[in-house]
Length: 194
Image 1: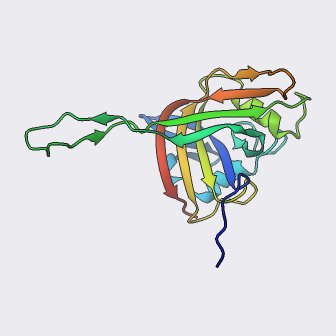
Image 2 (image 1 turned 60 degrees about the horizontal axis):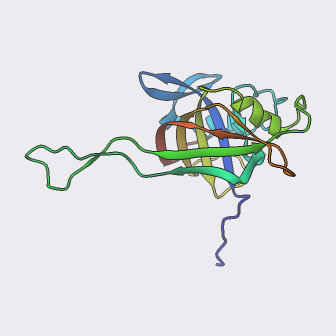
């Protein structure tokens, strides 16, 4: 069997509205609040099909994959914080991981028509226009953005808040909006349930 490489087109980034309860992030869905680690493929698909502001599920989250500039995209785990305080009974080099760190820096294109309701670029703008909006960011590699999320697919989950968006207006280039998310918690990789 021939091997197949993963192309740039084999990724999806879906943002789900979030709400924090006693320090734990929950996704906001029509059925209510769902803990981040109990999200199913059906939960994510509720927002994965939202690619424009005109979609009936639009307003709080969506699939922003096709708005994001590939050169302006960083969403990955980084080094974790460690606590090296030990008791007299702990092994000599033991450490406890405390915070899981990640980078979430995404730049998306602006639409020439800011009122266009059929634009993924306006969806990106609408979801990142204000600071302190909590999201659970779902990142999937290996399937394109139009493939439905399904059981046993691996996803990476990040809990973050928006910061002030930055308009990017380079001479002779397309206009963009950069959002450097404020990390709250890297919730890590896991395999989806149905």
